[in-house]
Amino acid sequence: MKRKAINFERLSDLLYMKNVSLNINYQEFDNEQELAEEDRILLSMARAAAGNAYAPYSRFWVGAAVRLANEVVVTGNNQENAAYPSGMCAERVALYAASARYPGIPVLTIAITAKSASFKVDYPIPPCGACRQVMAEYETSGPGSTRVILSGEKGKVLIFNEISSLLPFMFSKKEMNH
Ligand code: THU
Image 1 (cartoon, rainbow, N blue to C red):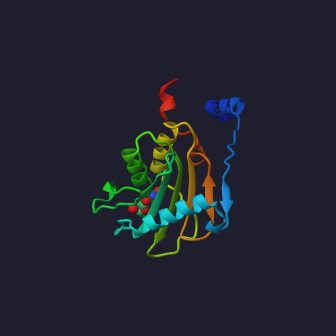
Image 2 (cartoon, helix red, strand yellow):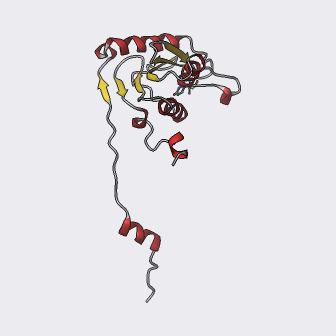
């Protein structure tokens, strides 16, 4: 009789592994009118920035507004290029401009929004992975956490109180100091 081969790798998985789950907390608002005034203003600045985006290829206009600990707000928007990969997301344009102009000043909050030429963006726009990584960099170089406000043109608004909520298991400078 032919025996079925045992897969030892899987067997040790079953013996030693633990299923672990992650809990992510964030706040959800039905619309931007429900936000605290300071956040509503930041979001309106991100919206204004989206209107100035240079996005002739995607016609998807993204705006970001960064509130710094010195109370300055720096905005940015996506900048596209005929050589597509040379373009840059709104979040990184805003964060890099903030760090260039106000080096070392902690980023308290970043508000992000978007609109499109072809459909209504009626959901909170999630930032891309590279932008999350850049948010993580500035958060971990400061003393506190960075809040993230996500919205579309209308509808729900989400608030995350720290970047790890958007980028669990993030790689940061701490990994190199163990
Ligand atoms: N985009 C951003 O500006 N931020 C994001 O987080 C996602 C995508 C831009 C890049 C490109 O100009 C357009 O949206 C479509 O991907």
